[in-house]
Length: 137
Image 1: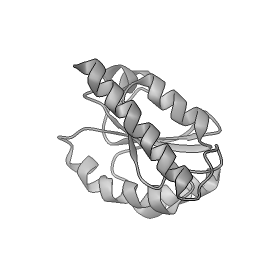
Image 2: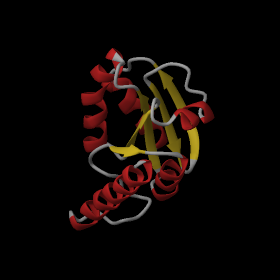
Image 3: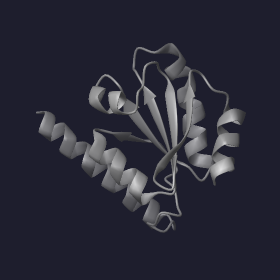
Image 4: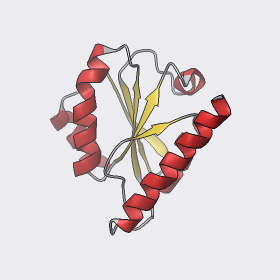
């Protein structure tokens, strides 16, 4: 069953990429997706980091109140900035969370040109996120 879920997530990621391409966006590293997409495992995150110049990884948990408050902000960031937003459920991706030393949620890691460039822990306001992204755009 876990393999089925992983395959569905991979298909959804492919659909999002195709939708971005058909909406007039090039499927290249210089473009971003206009809505957040879910990551399931290190391979998914590695693919996203390799494909897009700026990736904002939102490590969250369903039970986390601040994460829920941050969700609409993250959605606006995905729609209105050059960053591609990837969401990572730490309960479903414990190994990935440990790899990036996520000790509290929400934790946001901005990858620029394939490397972690910024790390923000806790609730962030939209202006702060935009500023961080613009610094690396």
